[in-house]
Image 1 (cartoon, rainbow, N blue to C red):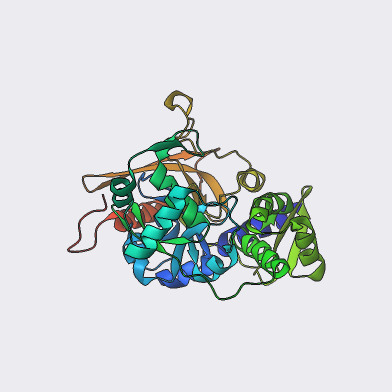
Image 2 (cartoon, rainbow, N blue to C red; image 1 turned 90 degrees about the vertical axis):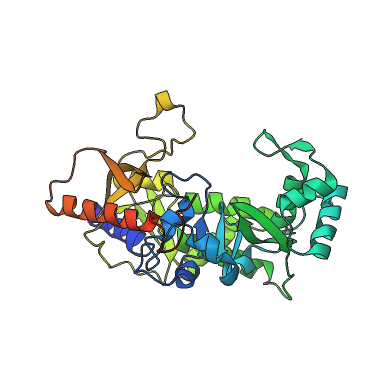
Length: 361
């Protein structure tokens, strides 16, 4: 019984996230949130996530097409791209403190001048450095822009060579009542990461409490959604998982090999990863080389409904090189090699520039 339930859970995690390829806008709307990361090895996380879900997607498409899409850069449980519908849920965020003098001047400048590159503000206000939230140093103007963006006063208009260009954000006319907004955020996270353990769901929503001007009961909201049937739930090996009641649970995972981004929704929750697939996956880009077990940017290797190992991929001089590693042993199914080769070919096509375009830098 437990084995059948686990298989059902794994299939749910895979098939509801790795849906049939859509248009770029369609995939953004279906996902709701795409985590972003600047590391490119062999491509940025947002591109690696979207290539499985968008027809004929090429690396860099979301950035190059961003101004024409109904999408925003913002935070959900991490930083990334959100649909306009989701953007309406993550705001308003109350200001944690009054705006500083520099933030006020920055906001006034952007409102007056239109889209502004950070370097323009550096020339105007100086290149002073301040301690950032990582313990390092950032330009004071850069930090002011980021705080104003987080507060919803600015939005990312576009990127130039990967650098965010900001403009004033339109303030929405109305907002959901706090209790309804909180419930919608619970359902959103549960959908993006379905099935999600209640402990992980509570942990993520605990951070979102700061988005409300008044105290909110995220635990009570989750429990109420479970009791009302809007969130389905099941206990598996002592862990209770939840998912929106509308989620399809009876589909089986297709016999495909997929190389997933380290931040793909299927593998985002490392605790669930170990429970579902029986081995610990860790992102090792920030691990000292001598201590890495799987590689700088090892991508989880999905075969059917099992994550059987990882892959390190490089693309240099037009040549695709994919090195596989396995948590236990290489799958014996003769179709595995054929499907692995097909996935490597898809990855190569995704990285190749379209005719008449330059390669992504």
